Length: 402
Image 1 (cartoon, rainbow, N blue to C red):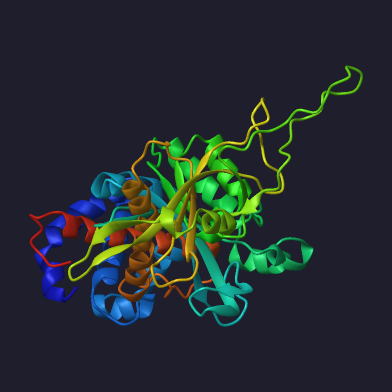
Image 2: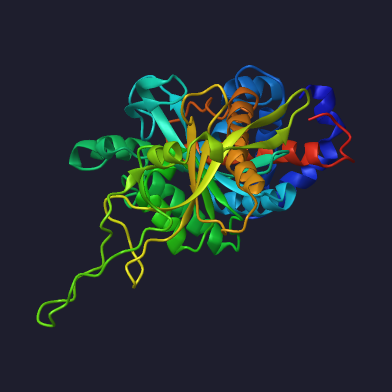
């Protein structure tokens, strides 16, 4: 925003800051929260503390003290933001994903040489897992977790953990488990996703899918075509039981096929043309094959009668491709129209819009501090700035361009 645009919505911003920072007990901390928001919203290439302070005309120590050494809890403000974001966006899906922050040196919390999606290769970086509320028209982050690599556990990392002030209970957890943790935390505030979507890094993980099902959550998850499944009409066979040893489990006699194999067996004749979004210039549409299958995997969890659950298999097979290019699995009802399934699967695209705006316009990856709490506070404040812009865009009465 330009200074003129920010001045035009000053009253709204002050009202917004007063509400989201209400849990901060001290009035000076609430004031600094509003000041930091203005710094994030003002146009500028860098959104680290010193450049923001120069644009605001204040001492950067005010911002630094608020983020790095004050006592307010980012998690409390995040939950408040999440409730407000869900009310503003009215999401059709919640999107689970992660993003990387390239770093120099090894002093930032949880930094390590790992795959960096921002650079498309392994590099020294931090990785954060996030959950976003989304529709085709709007989206906003609901929660964040900084991924802690395994090299940050154990005695060898004790000094680095002390310097970054990482809490003792914070240990390495897989990214998919961090996503489930965030869903549990949000459920504790009364928020539950209508449908969960994620890319193949999460969807292909059977433990993640099982975790969603144990929480009775609906999902449409992108998966790899190499995953295996039985046909919908496959039936398990129970071996004879002599009554002396434990009763044997029912098993499928046929071998499962890969998801790619199921779709290729069905052939192009099963494909239907589906439009999932009407763009400003061209409609977004392609050909899709939708089948009912029983996902197998290494450790399938059959029902009491030995059957595996039926799931939707959605495969995108463009007319100019020799085979499908993307696959999804979903536990949504069998009578749901194919167009709805595809639209929900494709809504995940909004995550890229969020990350681009959060990083390019609001400085998500510009934090230069080296403390665990500081990182989470900065990310929470960037989320607040993003939510304010989202509310400006979705409210026709908003006086300023956002």
